[in-house]
Image 1 (cartoon, rainbow, N blue to C red):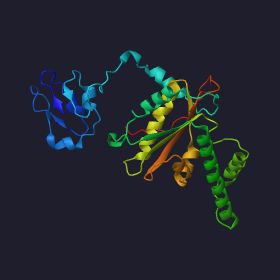
Image 2 (image 1 turned 45 degrees about the vertical axis):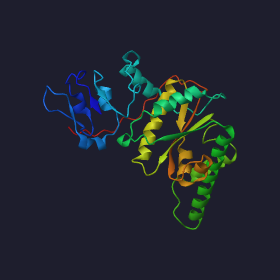
Image 3 (image 1 turned 180 degrees about the vertical axis):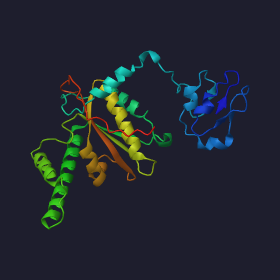
Image 4 (image 1 turned 90 degrees about the vertical axis):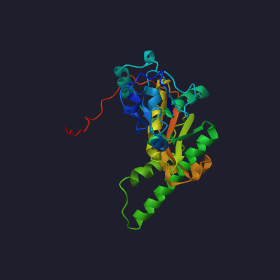
Length: 280
């Protein structure tokens, strides 16, 4: 990391914003010093490069072209962002129309920008468009829940305590047996968000990345929903991870079904008032 003394204006914003205090200020006349002992802790987050108003900082991890100016003219207003967040809905009715590859790539390009623990960017993505594989995911998920329902029913029949959701689960399985897809809803696309389990906070990183992807897809005119049942099946059964050739040390921490929405929702619906505890 270097600071160009000819470009530096001594604003010291790099010093104030670096999460691991690589920069330090000797006096108002000198450029920021770089603490060599702290360089090993650099998160490669790019804070220093993103905030420097004069491009005075260079960083070996960020080659020319990787620092992109913010286009203020395309940033949405607060009201636009809030309205978008309020109107987002889980979409489960899709047109029989494949998604263009460039749209999918744009969604993932946004998802990779999500914050992650120590900027590890641990989340990886598997995109499934092949119809036979999508059908197999539904089939394997259905088999998992059918086996789960049988196991819990067996426990209950032997006098064990049945979980409150057993009857609902059995009804769910009965519908799946008819061939109705209540897992991916015949979506033309499924994205698995996975990571190495030994990485810091892999589930949290994947969840935030998925939220970014969900909102990006909405901005591109696509609909999506979180595939909680499929993720649950993946968590407790290796059949789907094996189908997707997931590395043994990886887990699927999130799933998103996506496609062109068949219908448009004209209203947004009020939610329950938030439960807030203020400590002031």
